[in-house]
Length: 416
Image 1 (tube, rainbow, N blue to C red):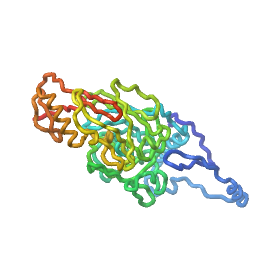
Image 2 (image 1 turned 180 degrees about the horizontal axis):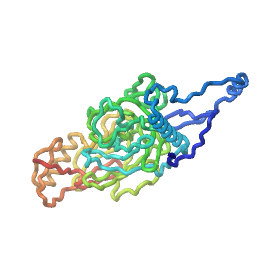
Image 3 (image 1 turned 90 degrees about the vertical axis):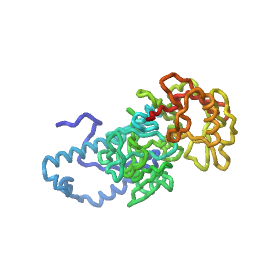
Image 4 (image 1 turned 180 degrees about the vertical axis):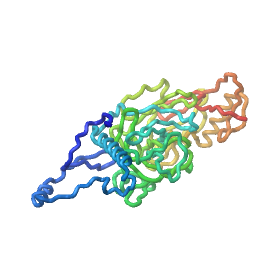
């Protein structure tokens, strides 16, 4: 039997290395040279020193290795993992170009999930998972085996024991220190994490360094949560790809992106609709006609969130009479409007919502009304006839206007 072609490897019986690379942050590594004079002095003073060399199978406590077949399979598994690790180690330091870093973005609607997903490979070899993108949080995480408490996801749960690139993050390391103090846990020298979301969902356990794969692009040593205890409204997804403004965010773990990313959301009501997610300051994909550009605002009280200056709302091309102060982000960090891909439904202050709702209902008075459904109080009966609803507009500070057609804010609901 012969191994499949891979990275050429030269196996040496005796090797003495005088230099090594040590990670000094979650964003990169440096090479340090070991002082070789210590080794020369040792061998000058111990010309005849010998150490007994034994095979690992001779010191294993496993009774299975007494069986030739089990011993052979165990050796092959160790060898496969070692070759995969060496392939990762000897690959170019940066195995991607930022301008090519990105992936398709799909709606989770048809999986019973109201958010937007990317397909990411985790580990070496990669286990492919669907992760929800979340601009409202920083930590990247996936469910991990063995599960202490996990929810049911659509694809097999990631097993770190099968990954050659899996590394546990230690307490006191730069990667562990990058976690917010309230999210950081330490046990027996290992760095743990715990993230609690506003809806009561949570994930916790061990922080790891792993390889992520987007298409043909591999990114090494990403700090990721390995969640053995996860509960909440995640449904079928394997975890989250945190894109917030904090240090643990995917975009901030890769300095070459300049902290920039762009995305175009897929339509949730179309099975084959694809959007995209791109990283870096390059031109990326072409933006659709009618795109509105609005600057992001920084809130020192909540630096991990992306704020946008919203000044007003409109229905059918007519601005709703509400004060801009309703949406204003104050100097003390109160108020304001955030962009959050992890929230499915846009929320507005009560005064703004009621003014928008009443204006929309007035311009849709010819359509029969239906009872409320869940949190939605403006519903209509549609009996197959084509109905024209007025568009809704968002007015941003500085002049940009984003107008959304009815398919962007009306949801079909089957009512008994």
